[in-house]
Image 1 (cartoon, one colour):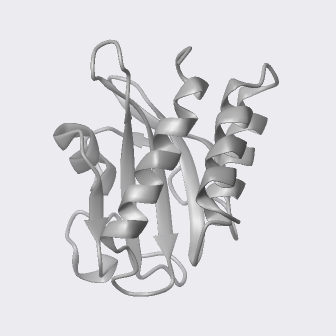
Image 2 (image 1 turned 180 degrees about the vertical axis):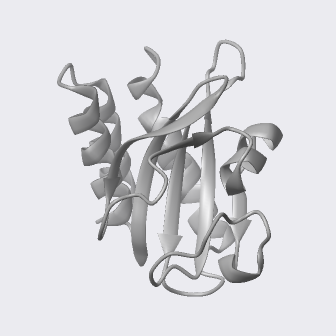
Length: 153
């Protein structure tokens, strides 16, 4: 699927008036279809907690809700920029390595009104060092297209 078609699908799902969790699942599915991704999660972020909205991939999230101060996500929230880990087993910020995940990227979604992190897209791969600069750029574009899940963009 071409990137522009994927972005169009994500924007359409995000702005659809349907149930938010179903829209988020459609977005996770579209992002997962972009490449060699094992698992994609769409998370909501507030002042204290990070909570899963939807996911695409095998199994269920190991941490459906966790404090904003834990794990790789806390770095993405604090730095307001993507966190890329080529080998999750060697990164002390990783809560626990699950299944066949070897690398991960977390893309923060910023509220355009105040630059506060309001959500994240978490993408996992079964390949070590799976996320190139091109992958990061297209996942950032996907996360921006999903902004309407949180705000009228």
